[in-house]
Image 1 (cartoon, helix red, strand yellow):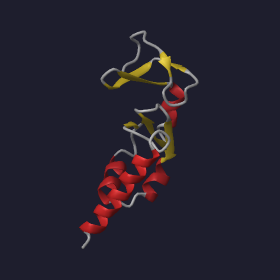
Image 2 (image 1 turned 45 degrees about the horizontal axis):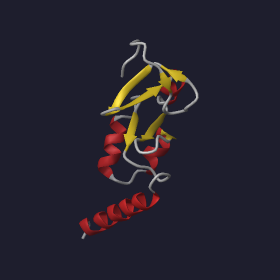
Image 3 (image 1 turned 135 degrees about the horizontal axis):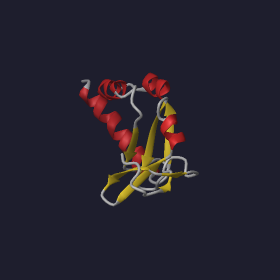
Image 4 (image 1 turned 90 degrees about the vertical axis):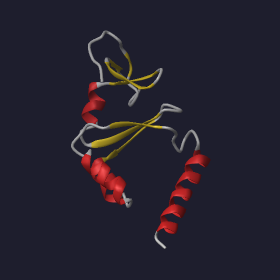
Length: 115
């Protein structure tokens, strides 16, 4: 993340405040994070959809309690003390059919792998 290079933009998480802390999430796509949302990231995991720009946040404790995939759980537990803001390719709002297909496919893989 960069700060102080005089670039400013609207916070990509809340969309309410001007922020100078930013990073290039993917080529040509910069995200800005205000101080308030950085503080929010101490106790919440935050995801920003790279397709539509919507942001989602959930309490870290809730996410860790609900994860059933052991590898994913291990990865998120390792990040529990970090201020983590992740970019996701798509979200349920911008491409609901694809997300449902992806989740259904992951469940089938998990079931097939347990036989």
